[in-house]
Length: 312
Ligand SMILES: [Mg+2]
Image 1 (cartoon, rainbow, N blue to C red):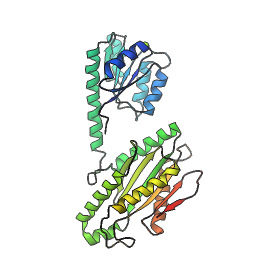
Image 2: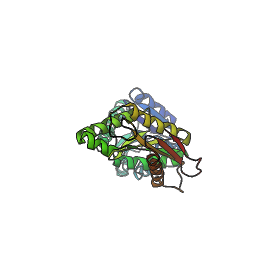
Image 3: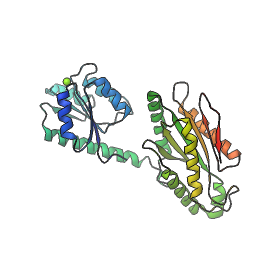
Image 4: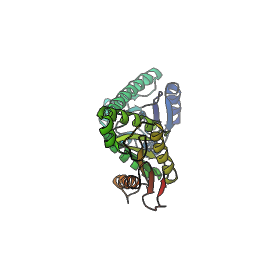
């Protein structure tokens, strides 16, 4: 779930330092740098790095303040911060660690110390991400679980709100799944869920897209930066992926294979709406797909609705 190369953001008001650190770390990591702490904060929030190297003495926001800001935000709290500073007294170092920094390196910069300490924090970060991922996975199907979905929706909602981009949700429900279990038994039912999850997972998705098991025989996809024009297209792709898996279902009233109903919804997140309302709209579209014959998709837009689009 993380890049083979970890990513690092360097924030130091002296370009001599950012250039030097970049040179030291570039071979092993994806490195970005900025000499402005305000820009640094914006960059962290736009694209979470694995590790941050942070100067203390800077105009605008100083390093201590920036560290506190990042540690008080649940989105950025888990990113290890290493202070790199000319402030060498134990008091400064203590204060640095007390604000939540993971490590503290005193200038002048020694390349091998920087490399070793960055490597340590990168390991810590990867371990943490891995453990987090373990508890975010639905054990039966291997896709994300409901808990992860809830967190991710909140996070993407805020991120899309900041970047003023559209956020889409797609809900999927297997048609006549109870009849499938009755006909083939629950073991086969579980296998069916696994295959369907695998097929949905394969639908070409971009890096930020998330597929989760919503509960029972329902799945959900979060599609960030996906405007309304594309949600219908994506919804249809999910529907087709399941149909093309060609899992026999003689008890289905709509097909001789397993199919899904799909409901999609899009919003440009703002304070007028909540993630729950987006979910409710997707659910409404899903219900419409069910009540109008199943194995079909409906999508809609929260706010300035361009109407509903349907496909079969
Ligand atoms: Mg400085």
